[in-house]
Length: 337
Image (cartoon, rainbow, N blue to C red):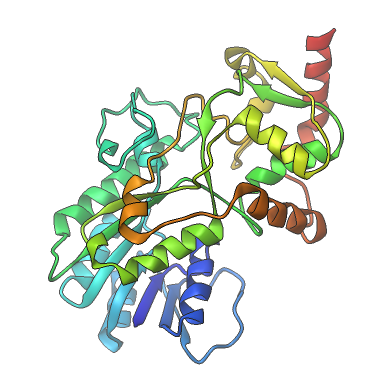
């Protein structure tokens, strides 16, 4: 197939590109060219630089080539989705949109396991510290609404995938390394709240494969799917499992959520601080995606060990807010004393 990927160099999308090339698809990447290259030269790979916010740039891509499939990995605002829909309608075989489970987690209430039909639940009161991104989720909902309004099985066939926390080697958010680095320093771990709320991650290679497997199943046209690991953890369970892979048993020190929220260490500009503190259960039904594309995921111990090895052997630098680690330790000491 001839495939266009809008984006193509992000965490999920670079794995999609590799997967598609390994299966002999012809892949065109369209982006601004600001991310470093990650692929070796490949006869089936073409890179075009342009700004997806500039309609003329996108129009040039479609005017010079034909595509069976378009993946939009970097649509964050409804006007961006609307522009894509207008440009590609009637000119491609199908349109696959990268959405997010945040479309659920901005809701006042959800019922776990969260099913795909809960994407329009009533919004919660605006909560700027929503761990799933309040504005991000609101805008992604709007993007989906635009695409479903344009959806047409013949002229603009849409599929939406909604990944949860995506993890693995080279994760730009370094969520797992936040905890890995703190476990490695041998000091206790400060855990906001009870640590009992359940959540799911997804291994980046499993997420990428799901995006690619859609191409084999026409039943997925006109549908949305959750993309998550089959294993569910509470934060306490996750930290225990992480400790076992690091051959240690970290001490957990819990601090009431409302008290934690008043501390300076509870916020760090531009970063996900104290990852997987979801503040409520956030796990997702995989029944639909399992039935429709035979979706299965890599065991946690396998992919997390690969991730740990990458961080310990290849990653340089610190995790988010590690500069405030001494403050964390002082707070824990004051709780014990």
